Length: 107
Image (cartoon, rainbow, N blue to C red):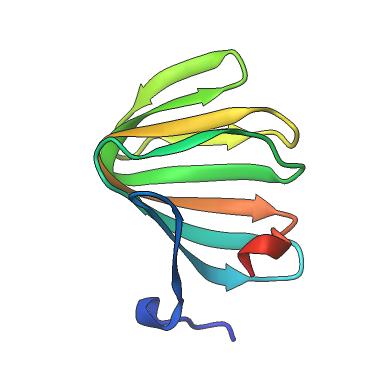
């Protein structure tokens, strides 16, 4: 399907206060929406997928390898495959992640 209504994608609680929706899932990339409550965290982890994203609303602290900084709406990131990273929402936020290749566990 090429057109996707927001409510047609299933919400999944990844961690307390962290809800993801896999919006599109193609052969070579995947788009995921993530909503986080203030104070919620995606703990330090790695995966082989390249990940890029965009913060649509709210704010948070992102650590990618040795790089760390505060993000606000409109800021972006790029996580190379295999690099450790974590995100903590300093206020409720919504962001969009794109993974290549798609993550099987998010399908």
